[in-house]
Image (cartoon, helix red, strand yellow):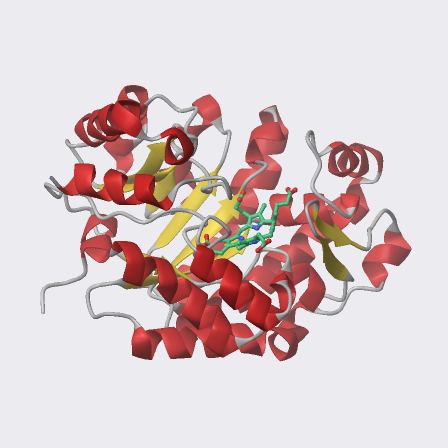
Length: 342
Ligand code: 1CP
């Protein structure tokens, strides 16, 4: 069998039709997802139920025929594995116990103990390795250390990551110790995902854009580079996608500097600009605005064609610039793929 399209793009091949998948492709815009989540009881129970987590991972593959499946889990499972309390408030989002001082850091568990807590995730991956169609690649993932730290420090999602910036600027030793602990745990977690059957892994640095100057280098780029180096030493053939969302001009050179095989672009990055300045170094992923999955129509068609054309000169994985939202219309997802593959 010819190699999977996603793996070919990640190896640097320019394809006539790029492989496609979608961030949050399993999620609340799908009625079948809502039904399975109800069966599990709640979101976290779904994450830790291997049979049902595998089922929701497979749902968008069956419905749309994406070229890749992304493991159903969450970036906040790592804080929980390190000992943080985690719960979800319906209609609002995640809540965690907070880390604001040395005592809070000292209460965390060592990085090499996370496997006990996370073993259901590895089980989900094993099920998916057996059940996915032969041409669909399986992507594992974790949050990048800065983004995970913003939730562990604030105890919730924040518009400007204010509490994390305050700890960084006010108590750098604790902030850096926390980042290091997350980095070590993430290496263990992703390595175990690869051993279980993940063929690609992705690091989500959703809040990288709020780090400026030296801070971006030290707390977004460096930890990503460290994780990639450790994974490449253990798993040289597993490609890695890095997503420094909101990096702007700092997208330039991010792939070569971190060792990432592919850099994922948000929707605020101009595709022609990125083709010239980022794709010249290797594969890129992105970057349709998720709003088109709500509004659809000719604008969606035009945008898919424009992005495909902009990146047609090099390796490209088609995706959104961020996750699909719960108010999206599944018909627009089908239209996106139909347009891309026409
Ligand atoms: O109600 C529900 O069912 C929960 C909604 C939901 C879903 C479907 C959450 C809560 N997480 C997920 C799954 C998820 N999260 C995946 C699964 C695979 C897929 O893409 O289909 C992935 C990769 C994530 C990653 C994730 N979780 C990120 C990084 C990507 C991004 O969106 O920026 C972040 C920041 C989170 C935290 C999180 N989990 C859930 C929510 C609502 C949030 C954001 C919280 C906030 O900042 O307010």
